[in-house]
Image 1 (cartoon, rainbow, N blue to C red):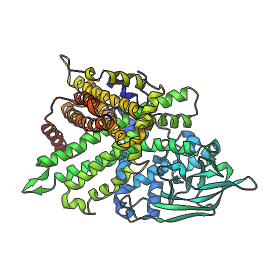
Image 2 (cartoon, rainbow, N blue to C red):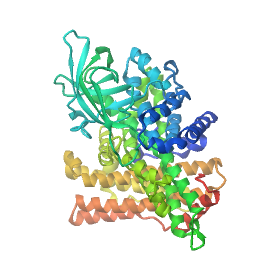
Image 3 (cartoon, rainbow, N blue to C red):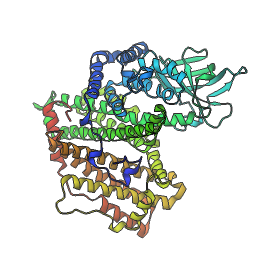
Image 4 (tube, helix red, strand yellow):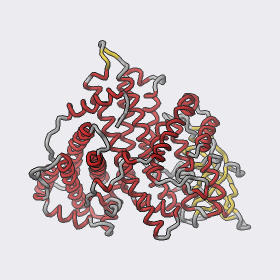
Length: 591
């Protein structure tokens, strides 16, 4: 089957046999994951307290050690000193690095946004000069886009570049802030406007160039081991050959790299969520109250089960889209496209899913970390336990790579634009459903299996989303994006749809292939997830309906979406207890 285009999941179905699931990792992928786990155990966790004191040199040394093991070259082609692994493998590495607290921020900033703009958009000379050193860990990279007056509106930055009289250098002046790795990065990918250009250009700046001034590290709520500082560029002479791509290409580079950063953040937080869940299970199996282990209490079981369900759904979704990206990369390279551009074009294509999973992943980790702290009780508020660090470190992810508020708007806007311009037939399908909303619900058929039922529910959720998309488009036209509250309602429905469907497809494939022996636990997770999704769909649909229509129109649409969100009841208490009991017995996140 041909892969779905970005956002097309709203109007088309995917067969479970066509998705990649983590149960299919090969031995090389498992070996890479184990290497990272061993690195964290031996090199990182023993010094994590020291890193949190803001020791820039210690963090730089630790990142370089990861480079010596080859971990910084996983995404880089062999001719530049890397291992040229698949996107799925890159995401598996990102997941496992994600358990490394602030180290993961430093590592991911260098290997991702600090390296890949040069890898994907740079010329051969730039790749040989810089990417080879970034891939080995000899260099550490930083990405310099944000300014005091330019955050979400990246193109509004004031940093300026002027060509020198002899035409050999660009003279850069400006200020960048919230720069990860600022304190020790060797190379900076800097965005600036040449003369009075309307859009940005991109440059490679070396830390030792005259006029580069690094400010002191910011005092932050979390990720304290990560060096975050302002960088000042005062008449910095940057060789003209250090421009990345063409003049005025910087905004395209910045936005494309942000798509990559978003989906990799979604993978990164899986590792953190698994660790926080594992810490929760371990502590619940040690702590006694009223002479009973707290892991025997129903409320604690509820928390552990929810941590596991949401983390597993996130993982299912991330590796579903990662394989889609791999397939598109292969297709583009087969058509003769440069491998660097093929990689970034494939990632950028799945902008809807990248934004969606950045939001979902960061909010899953926030939930999991918060519950971990709660399960630890008073100890969860003590710096003595990992739950404290995990809780503080998690918060930044809802701000990184574009705030969740921006990404919620972006995912809906991008899906609608792609559907309307003909990437897939959203307009026709949505209009037909809207005009026939009283009769569009799929109902139970005789002999329906467990998986057929859950996938039918999800198809009904899709119909509710499409009816709302048509209604808001018709009501507000080009001004619909100003109705941010309604767009947020639709985005939350889309998030529930994609993650529930990804979970269903993964668990169905597990059942069909016999990949797990304890399939009933996974079916419990799916039953709870899809049941909860019905509430998410209904609440957001109700809010949207009455914000779009009034009178009889609102009543008609409300009845339709309520019908589409309706599902059979599930004993979620017992299902969650079975999930938690399994994990508590294993004393581990073993899913």
